[in-house]
Length: 176
Image (cartoon, rainbow, N blue to C red):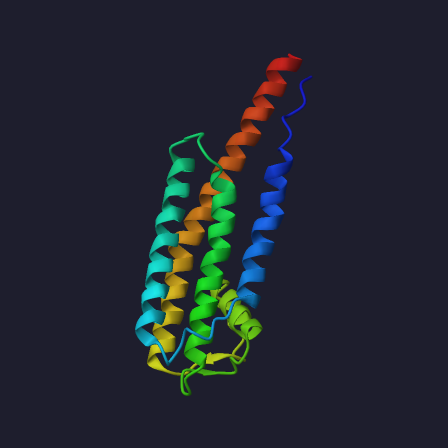
């Protein structure tokens, strides 16, 4: 019976190192440029990053749905999902620098916590969007999550199910 192929070491390094690198950048990069002192730059970067991330996510999702074997869509989706969370988190942090946008959001961890809670559509009420702008961004994140990240998770599930089915089929053919 043939053993399934093992993932190369570089793939495991990317799977662990990519997220670690992204979160390290989020917690160490100077994000003070974004916020009330540079609104045009802040909104431009936010829209560009979100648009680019959505485009790359759609590309990875489509590569799974049309059964293209090129690239690593699973890894791409994982990293882009993290980028999505960090982009929204940075936006919330920038909004919180102006009074009247958020209640309870003061640090990068607060912003990341609120982003994850919003993505999960749980909402505990300890951090609350107060301004109309903050509420629009929260609604945008919920819609973005429902559309792009749910489609990405569905595509990954289909890919994994297909791979498991192919392995089971090979085992049946090899043992029968």
